[in-house]
Length: 418
Image (tube, helix red, strand yellow):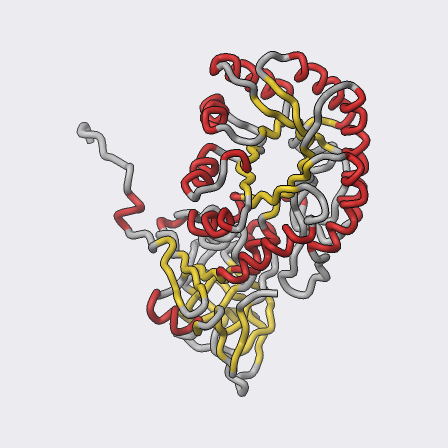
């Protein structure tokens, strides 16, 4: 459920008409609903309320500090994968003791930064990383709280680019090696092993892979406790799938009802890393039609947004619902490609899609763009990144201004010898 709905043929975000915002802001831009963000967070948090838990927002999904501030106010923690994301989370007011640091290639500087800020836990991806954290913690004369990211070797039905729990994946430590690595960690003077972590992928529309992986993880936790290792946290990762078009997506309660019976006997606090399920349907990308054209057997709608603004269709072949911001009941439908102005054939938002006929100047909404939309955007073709607008009731706020041409060259310099 989200707060983008049509009233008399006009698309609204909460109480504001999307076209009216577009006329003031100019396109393209991202538009978020605050009410949807908070409602989605609460739905997940409430679903796991019967057990001790912490719901961490995956900052990689949407790293705008205003979004993070809203969720921090709801009690959310943060799942970060870089020093920059840690900086953003802290800037937004997230409690350091609610931050977990995941990621395959943490640098020494990032580890030291996180230790000095006093984060809750590192999710460690390799034995060499474990040794580096120990070394830095000893230098700082602190104990580094760690969990090992365990790869449970569970196959999931999702795009290969976001499947992370199979034995071929670069992520995590094989389950068969986990006990040995924990024994090493327990003996290192700079480490305090306090948790177990897993993350099997993203946009997963079935509870069964989670059930299979958590059963494996629970057996590991029980063995670790018998060994005398004080496991207090089980980080189950995230990846809960959502509806983009017509997918049958499980609800937060569906996931919780499957996992809570397995997790409860462990007597650990559970960490949930949720990003897409919170932010995905809380945002849209608004774009203006520049031209319509025909080429051979194809009809094209050329819009002012591009793959640098929303990469998912080009990168993952992801399907996003697209609809005019103002519906015309009499408009015929036609099969079209919705494309952007970038000099790449992969610059598209839809291929062979049946859409109402539109004219230059009309606005289109690309739905379910609140997660992995702006956070994956770039300046390719030297295109300024778009603004982000937040709506709360009848108020709209610019939470990121549109970049200028000057911003594109900021930080660059021409050597005097040239």
